[in-house]
Image (cartoon, rainbow, N blue to C red; front, side, top):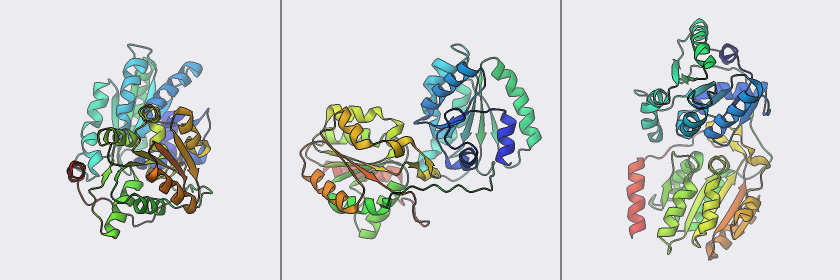
Length: 372
């Protein structure tokens, strides 16, 4: 189905969400049509943020908002759905559009498998009636379902379209880029060179995939690294838990701007505990690159200054490899919590692979290394 037909059938004029590769057609359509516009289209920090923004929009306009996300974001909406949107509370009608990663019977990455199994069940448990959209869904089917959903929305209930891979199509292209010169894979390569046999916790997405391939190319063990392949936004908290309980080891966290924004409060907790053996690196390309390149608000945010404000003892921002290498050396020698923000371009090589070890193998090897 063409994405414009889908959007027209929804009958909404406000969209907010967190980008998803399964919904790339919708994301690109919204960017081409509205860009980032506070009254029409907002890419929020996390899916719960979207639900709350949608509630404010509805109360101000009386209209029905659309919230889009990957199904991994369902966990982030449970609280606002149950205690804000639900018709037993404020009865805020909302249309959710959810990319179905890890659909049973379709091969996907390990972090999506269980989430895919419970996607529809979670919606049922939240009293959100859902409809699965696939390549065979006709426009008449969609319009008929929307007529049914309108009755539920009028009662202050929420509904959801669960979108299978390839269900939506969009022919126009969107180019996502910035003016930064540094390439993320080279940034990770410099980090690996500077950290030796220290611990690295890396965030979800391409940074972890690049870290894995750099270790392979170097002939190095993967035992030093914990690859946070799912659980977006939580890498710094994982690193904090390791650093506090392994005070004699240097612990490096490779984070992304979209991930750091998703659970920004974690940085305040890191700063408050301030483990002297932890280095937090935020690679900032101002984009949700792994799922297509749609922008985050971090392109206009100085993460290093933010870190200083909330209590990081040392925080620097770099945009050249010379400055990065100096920052890495200083952080390695420092006896205090450090943050390095690295300004990064958008893009990765087309043949970037994925980890060939399982998530369980990664955890077990990492734990053995920590126990040495």
